[in-house]
Image (cartoon, rainbow, N blue to C red):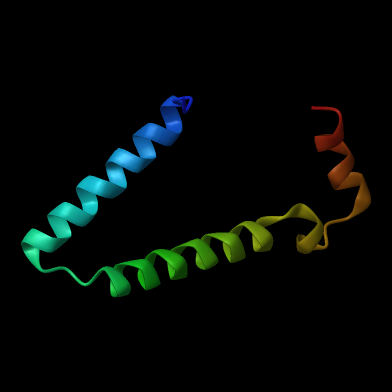
Length: 68
C-alpha cells in the first residue's frame, strides 16, 4: 500500500490538471517547461547576487546581522 503525503498529492493533482487544461487549450508544454526553467535560473541568480558576501560589504557592517 502506498502512503499518501499531502504536498505530493497536491503537486501531482496540479500537474495532472495543468496537462489536461494544456491539451484542451493547445498549449505547448515544452515551451512552458523551458520558461519555468528560465524563471528558476533567474531567481537563483538574483538570490546569489543579493547574498551579502557577494556585495563586498565591510566586515563591521555584516556583524550587525550576525547578532539579529
